[in-house]
Length: 311
Image (cartoon, rainbow, N blue to C red; front, side):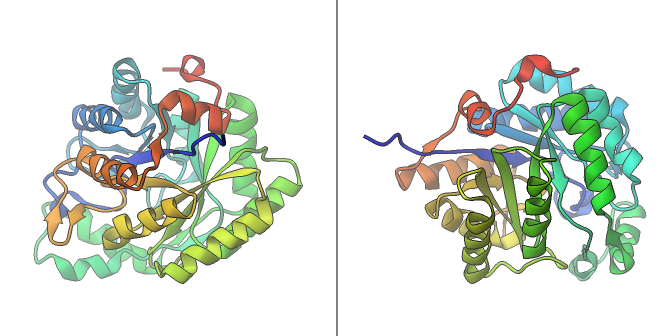
Protein backbone atom coordinates (compact mmCIF):
# COMPACT_ATOMS: atom_id res chain seq x y z
CA UNK A 1 0.00 0.00 0.00
CA UNK A 2 1.31 3.48 -0.88
CA UNK A 3 2.23 5.64 2.10
CA UNK A 4 -0.26 8.42 2.75
CA UNK A 5 1.00 11.87 1.79
CA UNK A 6 1.65 14.22 4.67
CA UNK A 7 0.87 17.94 4.31
CA UNK A 8 3.31 20.41 5.86
CA UNK A 9 1.63 23.45 7.41
CA UNK A 10 3.83 26.55 7.60
CA UNK A 11 2.71 29.47 9.74
CA UNK A 12 4.11 32.95 9.02
CA UNK A 13 3.46 34.69 12.30
CA UNK A 14 3.94 38.44 11.76
CA UNK A 15 5.84 39.36 8.58
CA UNK A 16 6.62 42.93 7.54
CA UNK A 17 3.63 43.73 5.32
CA UNK A 18 0.78 44.40 7.72
CA UNK A 19 0.94 47.28 10.18
CA UNK A 20 -0.39 47.68 13.74
CA UNK A 21 -3.38 49.74 12.59
CA UNK A 22 -4.67 46.88 10.43
CA UNK A 23 -5.34 44.40 13.24
CA UNK A 24 -5.14 44.47 17.04
CA UNK A 25 -4.17 40.79 16.88
CA UNK A 26 -0.94 41.23 14.90
CA UNK A 27 1.92 40.11 17.18
CA UNK A 28 4.52 42.86 17.54
CA UNK A 29 6.64 42.34 20.67
CA UNK A 30 9.04 39.44 21.21
CA UNK A 31 6.69 38.17 23.91
CA UNK A 32 3.72 38.19 21.53
CA UNK A 33 5.69 36.63 18.66
CA UNK A 34 6.91 33.81 20.90
CA UNK A 35 3.46 33.15 22.33
CA UNK A 36 1.81 33.16 18.89
CA UNK A 37 4.47 30.89 17.42
CA UNK A 38 4.19 28.32 20.18
CA UNK A 39 0.39 28.29 19.92
CA UNK A 40 0.57 27.88 16.13
CA UNK A 41 2.92 24.92 16.56
CA UNK A 42 0.58 23.36 19.10
CA UNK A 43 -2.28 23.79 16.61
CA UNK A 44 -0.41 21.80 13.98
CA UNK A 45 2.13 24.02 12.18
CA UNK A 46 5.32 22.07 11.50
CA UNK A 47 7.24 25.17 10.35
CA UNK A 48 7.16 28.64 11.92
CA UNK A 49 8.30 31.47 9.61
CA UNK A 50 9.54 34.52 11.48
CA UNK A 51 10.22 38.23 11.11
CA UNK A 52 10.99 40.64 13.97
CA UNK A 53 9.31 43.91 14.92
CA UNK A 54 10.44 46.94 16.89
CA UNK A 55 8.62 46.46 20.21
CA UNK A 56 8.06 50.24 20.55
CA UNK A 57 6.09 50.90 17.35
CA UNK A 58 5.67 47.57 15.54
CA UNK A 59 7.86 48.51 12.59
CA UNK A 60 9.90 45.72 10.96
CA UNK A 61 13.45 45.35 12.28
CA UNK A 62 16.39 43.19 11.16
CA UNK A 63 18.09 43.47 14.58
CA UNK A 64 19.47 40.04 15.63
CA UNK A 65 19.11 41.04 19.28
CA UNK A 66 15.33 41.29 18.85
CA UNK A 67 15.19 37.91 17.10
CA UNK A 68 17.17 36.37 19.94
CA UNK A 69 14.51 37.50 22.40
CA UNK A 70 12.01 35.05 20.93
CA UNK A 71 13.91 32.34 19.01
CA UNK A 72 15.17 30.42 22.08
CA UNK A 73 11.76 30.59 23.73
CA UNK A 74 10.04 29.08 20.71
CA UNK A 75 12.66 26.35 20.43
CA UNK A 76 12.35 25.47 24.12
CA UNK A 77 8.56 25.27 24.02
CA UNK A 78 8.01 23.44 20.72
CA UNK A 79 9.61 21.06 18.25
CA UNK A 80 8.59 23.15 15.24
CA UNK A 81 11.08 23.95 12.50
CA UNK A 82 12.08 27.61 12.85
CA UNK A 83 12.37 29.43 9.54
CA UNK A 84 13.82 32.97 9.54
CA UNK A 85 13.22 35.53 6.81
CA UNK A 86 16.00 36.75 4.54
CA UNK A 87 13.49 39.09 2.88
CA UNK A 88 13.29 41.33 5.93
CA UNK A 89 11.33 44.44 5.09
CA UNK A 90 11.27 47.32 2.65
CA UNK A 91 14.46 49.35 2.56
CA UNK A 92 16.66 46.84 4.37
CA UNK A 93 20.03 46.08 2.82
CA UNK A 94 21.08 42.50 2.15
CA UNK A 95 23.55 42.78 5.05
CA UNK A 96 20.72 43.75 7.37
CA UNK A 97 18.47 40.99 6.01
CA UNK A 98 21.19 38.38 6.65
CA UNK A 99 22.24 39.58 10.09
CA UNK A 100 19.76 37.54 12.15
CA UNK A 101 19.95 34.33 10.07
CA UNK A 102 23.76 34.33 10.19
CA UNK A 103 23.62 34.81 13.96
CA UNK A 104 20.97 32.12 14.52
CA UNK A 105 22.01 29.53 11.88
CA UNK A 106 18.46 28.14 11.64
CA UNK A 107 17.31 24.96 9.95
CA UNK A 108 15.45 27.00 7.32
CA UNK A 109 15.29 30.49 5.86
CA UNK A 110 13.09 32.02 3.22
CA UNK A 111 14.84 33.03 -0.01
CA UNK A 112 13.10 35.13 -2.65
CA UNK A 113 13.95 34.03 -6.16
CA UNK A 114 13.91 37.33 -8.02
CA UNK A 115 13.69 41.10 -7.87
CA UNK A 116 10.19 42.50 -8.22
CA UNK A 117 7.82 45.40 -7.66
CA UNK A 118 6.03 44.83 -4.35
CA UNK A 119 3.04 47.15 -4.14
CA UNK A 120 1.35 47.65 -0.77
CA UNK A 121 0.15 51.21 -1.40
CA UNK A 122 -3.44 50.18 -2.30
CA UNK A 123 -3.89 49.43 1.42
CA UNK A 124 -3.67 53.18 2.11
CA UNK A 125 -7.26 53.62 0.98
CA UNK A 126 -8.62 51.19 3.56
CA UNK A 127 -7.71 53.22 6.67
CA UNK A 128 -8.60 56.83 7.55
CA UNK A 129 -5.99 57.16 10.28
CA UNK A 130 -2.92 55.21 11.39
CA UNK A 131 -1.47 54.58 14.84
CA UNK A 132 2.11 55.41 13.79
CA UNK A 133 3.62 57.81 11.26
CA UNK A 134 5.79 55.10 9.76
CA UNK A 135 2.78 53.06 8.59
CA UNK A 136 1.37 55.27 5.79
CA UNK A 137 4.89 56.36 4.82
CA UNK A 138 5.98 52.75 4.32
CA UNK A 139 2.86 51.84 2.36
CA UNK A 140 3.26 54.87 0.08
CA UNK A 141 6.97 54.10 -0.42
CA UNK A 142 6.04 50.75 -1.97
CA UNK A 143 4.75 52.67 -5.01
CA UNK A 144 8.40 53.34 -5.93
CA UNK A 145 10.06 50.26 -4.42
CA UNK A 146 11.88 47.36 -6.01
CA UNK A 147 12.37 44.30 -3.81
CA UNK A 148 15.93 43.48 -4.77
CA UNK A 149 17.04 39.85 -5.14
CA UNK A 150 19.64 39.76 -7.90
CA UNK A 151 21.44 36.61 -9.02
CA UNK A 152 24.49 37.84 -7.10
CA UNK A 153 22.39 38.42 -3.97
CA UNK A 154 20.93 34.92 -4.20
CA UNK A 155 24.39 33.41 -4.74
CA UNK A 156 25.59 35.13 -1.59
CA UNK A 157 22.70 33.85 0.51
CA UNK A 158 23.21 30.31 -0.79
CA UNK A 159 26.92 30.47 0.01
CA UNK A 160 26.89 32.23 3.38
CA UNK A 161 23.75 30.64 4.83
CA UNK A 162 23.42 27.44 2.83
CA UNK A 163 27.04 26.31 2.69
CA UNK A 164 28.19 28.26 5.73
CA UNK A 165 25.42 27.38 8.17
CA UNK A 166 23.80 24.22 6.79
CA UNK A 167 20.53 26.13 6.42
CA UNK A 168 18.02 24.99 3.81
CA UNK A 169 15.50 27.23 2.12
CA UNK A 170 11.87 28.01 1.53
CA UNK A 171 12.28 29.24 -2.05
CA UNK A 172 9.68 31.99 -2.46
CA UNK A 173 8.45 32.21 -6.06
CA UNK A 174 6.12 35.13 -6.78
CA UNK A 175 5.98 34.54 -10.52
CA UNK A 176 6.78 32.00 -13.22
CA UNK A 177 10.21 33.50 -13.91
CA UNK A 178 11.18 32.84 -10.30
CA UNK A 179 10.73 29.11 -10.89
CA UNK A 180 13.12 29.33 -13.82
CA UNK A 181 15.61 31.27 -11.67
CA UNK A 182 15.49 28.42 -9.15
CA UNK A 183 15.98 25.88 -11.95
CA UNK A 184 19.06 27.87 -13.01
CA UNK A 185 20.58 27.46 -9.54
CA UNK A 186 19.64 23.78 -9.53
CA UNK A 187 21.40 23.33 -12.88
CA UNK A 188 24.50 24.99 -11.40
CA UNK A 189 24.27 22.67 -8.38
CA UNK A 190 24.16 25.65 -6.03
CA UNK A 191 20.93 24.28 -4.56
CA UNK A 192 20.28 20.64 -3.76
CA UNK A 193 17.05 18.63 -3.69
CA UNK A 194 14.64 18.25 -2.10
CA UNK A 195 13.66 21.84 -2.86
CA UNK A 196 10.90 23.48 -0.81
CA UNK A 197 9.15 25.64 -3.40
CA UNK A 198 6.73 28.22 -1.99
CA UNK A 199 4.55 29.60 -4.80
CA UNK A 200 2.98 32.94 -3.86
CA UNK A 201 -0.19 34.36 -5.35
CA UNK A 202 -1.94 37.70 -4.99
CA UNK A 203 0.84 40.20 -4.28
CA UNK A 204 0.71 43.33 -6.49
CA UNK A 205 3.81 42.85 -8.62
CA UNK A 206 3.61 39.05 -8.70
CA UNK A 207 1.36 36.47 -10.30
CA UNK A 208 -2.39 36.77 -9.64
CA UNK A 209 -4.49 34.43 -7.50
CA UNK A 210 -6.57 32.79 -10.24
CA UNK A 211 -6.94 28.99 -10.15
CA UNK A 212 -5.48 28.79 -13.66
CA UNK A 213 -2.27 30.37 -12.36
CA UNK A 214 -2.10 27.88 -9.51
CA UNK A 215 -2.33 25.03 -12.01
CA UNK A 216 0.23 26.66 -14.33
CA UNK A 217 2.77 27.20 -11.55
CA UNK A 218 2.34 23.58 -10.47
CA UNK A 219 2.72 22.33 -14.04
CA UNK A 220 5.84 24.48 -14.54
CA UNK A 221 7.42 23.31 -11.29
CA UNK A 222 6.71 19.69 -12.20
CA UNK A 223 8.39 20.22 -15.57
CA UNK A 224 11.44 21.93 -14.06
CA UNK A 225 11.92 19.92 -10.87
CA UNK A 226 10.18 16.57 -11.37
CA UNK A 227 10.29 14.61 -8.15
CA UNK A 228 13.05 16.79 -6.67
CA UNK A 229 10.80 19.21 -4.79
CA UNK A 230 8.10 19.71 -2.22
CA UNK A 231 5.45 22.22 -3.31
CA UNK A 232 3.76 24.72 -1.02
CA UNK A 233 1.14 27.40 -1.65
CA UNK A 234 0.70 30.88 -0.20
CA UNK A 235 -2.43 32.88 -1.01
CA UNK A 236 -2.27 36.54 -0.01
CA UNK A 237 -5.15 38.27 1.75
CA UNK A 238 -8.65 37.05 1.03
CA UNK A 239 -7.32 34.39 -1.32
CA UNK A 240 -5.57 32.52 1.50
CA UNK A 241 -7.87 29.66 2.46
CA UNK A 242 -9.48 28.89 -0.89
CA UNK A 243 -6.23 28.89 -2.86
CA UNK A 244 -4.21 26.83 -0.40
CA UNK A 245 -7.06 24.33 -0.12
CA UNK A 246 -7.02 23.94 -3.89
CA UNK A 247 -3.25 23.55 -3.80
CA UNK A 248 -3.41 20.89 -1.11
CA UNK A 249 -5.89 18.88 -3.19
CA UNK A 250 -3.41 19.14 -6.07
CA UNK A 251 -0.60 17.67 -3.95
CA UNK A 252 0.80 20.73 -2.20
CA UNK A 253 1.73 21.85 1.28
CA UNK A 254 0.21 25.02 2.71
CA UNK A 255 1.17 28.27 4.41
CA UNK A 256 -1.05 30.39 6.65
CA UNK A 257 -0.38 33.13 9.20
CA UNK A 258 -1.01 36.79 9.88
CA UNK A 259 1.90 37.75 7.62
CA UNK A 260 -0.14 36.54 4.65
CA UNK A 261 -3.71 37.36 5.71
CA UNK A 262 -5.25 39.07 8.72
CA UNK A 263 -8.58 37.28 8.29
CA UNK A 264 -10.13 33.97 9.20
CA UNK A 265 -13.17 34.45 6.96
CA UNK A 266 -15.00 37.20 5.10
CA UNK A 267 -14.98 40.29 7.31
CA UNK A 268 -13.70 38.28 10.28
CA UNK A 269 -10.27 39.14 11.64
CA UNK A 270 -8.26 36.16 12.85
CA UNK A 271 -7.67 36.57 16.57
CA UNK A 272 -4.49 34.51 16.41
CA UNK A 273 -2.20 32.64 14.08
CA UNK A 274 -3.35 29.43 15.73
CA UNK A 275 -6.91 30.20 14.53
CA UNK A 276 -5.73 30.05 10.93
CA UNK A 277 -3.68 26.89 11.52
CA UNK A 278 -6.68 25.22 13.14
CA UNK A 279 -8.95 26.29 10.27
CA UNK A 280 -6.73 24.88 7.51
CA UNK A 281 -5.95 21.76 9.53
CA UNK A 282 -9.67 21.07 9.90
CA UNK A 283 -10.22 21.57 6.17
CA UNK A 284 -7.33 19.26 5.25
CA UNK A 285 -8.36 16.53 7.67
CA UNK A 286 -11.92 16.71 6.35
CA UNK A 287 -10.39 16.03 2.93
CA UNK A 288 -8.69 12.92 4.40
CA UNK A 289 -5.24 14.54 4.19
CA UNK A 290 -2.76 13.89 6.99
CA UNK A 291 -0.80 16.67 8.69
CA UNK A 292 2.98 16.37 8.88
CA UNK A 293 4.65 16.57 12.27
CA UNK A 294 7.85 18.61 12.64
CA UNK A 295 9.84 15.37 12.58
CA UNK A 296 8.16 14.32 9.33
CA UNK A 297 8.70 17.78 7.83
CA UNK A 298 12.41 17.57 8.67
CA UNK A 299 12.65 14.22 6.90
CA UNK A 300 10.71 15.44 3.84
CA UNK A 301 12.92 18.54 3.51
CA UNK A 302 16.23 17.00 4.62
CA UNK A 303 16.82 19.53 7.40
CA UNK A 304 19.81 19.47 9.74
CA UNK A 305 17.77 19.25 12.95
CA UNK A 306 16.82 21.59 15.75
CA UNK A 307 19.91 20.68 17.76
CA UNK A 308 22.18 22.16 15.07
CA UNK A 309 21.06 25.80 15.36
CA UNK A 310 22.79 28.63 17.25
CA UNK A 311 20.01 29.65 19.62
